[in-house]
Image (cartoon, rainbow, N blue to C red):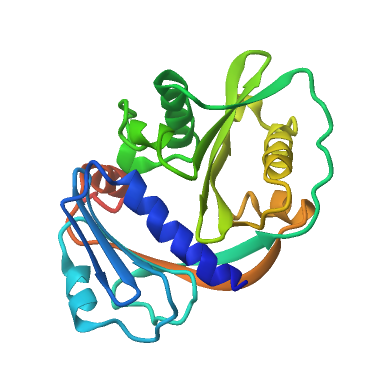
Length: 257
């Protein structure tokens, strides 16, 4: 199995589901999936097969107003002019998974109702944080349709009954992908993320799991048997200043005269 290609397919389909209720345009040009949303004003270009050049119809959308991103898991497209490039290693874990060590203080549940899904959403939006979804409002990121969508599962970890950690998994394209594993600051440094990931891996015993780690999360994935199989790049640019971009510019002092 080509893990990078499987991840790319999973990732593009994941965003199609996540933006299903907000997308004003969704088109595919070859292996380039283009998704546009008006609120927040964003254009996402996601590759599902390796390509060196951008088709003209795709290149033209990079000047769309608002935040524009080009997600290339294959790492072969050159960075468009004016875009910031961030490395995105693709990792996979294969093989048997040992039974996780029991922790009476931590309970992991597979979310089944809207209230719990809203809690998962809040943890992800505030914990990463996702700036364009702040301040958090209900269903600003996770549509309730995910509860009934094939392949999706939301996971919520309770630390002595308090919401502490969360993540999403999506079974599509021959692999299970892990997205947005987060632990809230007040619950960190207690091994909760390790407990969550170990349990999720065990529940998908026998399946390959893929992910793109954050820099802070990479040591955890390394220690649990994930290996890097490819290195892609995430290219971003803001063509008009959204409220959160303007706020960050002033905070950094660039807005001072």
